[in-house]
Image (cartoon, rainbow over all chains, first blue to last red; front, side):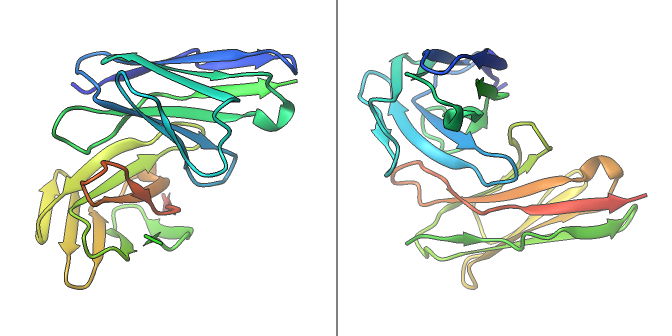
Length: 115
Length: 111
């Protein structure tokens, strides 16, 4: 149980384009989903927290207009990196927690490369 | 500022020995404690959660929690080369469900 999928696993795009990453909880309803970013050899950095049907809460320093998060259902959240630039290249990981628990289950991650 | 601290390592342990990973946290209100394992280039995977003082065992893994001293540890018995990874400690106070993450300890199991 507690499986989270993420799609795509890897994406390469040109500078200035937008990229959408999907995160799905496959066997449970995700009350909250979290989006993280991780640069090589660095720690996980929480970008934002989203609850189903509500606006996401962004961490300090994360541009909400650049990283659009939608959590339209209890099993799906999306992160759209708008007007991507090479400095946005990173490993983006989502996690999800179910109701009445704070255990987070992670998706496999999406490696974004912006040329 | 709520903090979770771990020794970054690397911690080198011979195969078959016990690996001991430690974590301290600053927020006394913390209620839930987690250990995740992250292989290079992969996302974190949950190893264990612990909520009460004392030991919790799951196979070769034992988590130990001491709330009075504000530390949580992870013991790995009979260490295998496949245990080589970065181990992340995470702590939650439950009220907002966010996890406060340590920077991780890199563990190397030498054959």
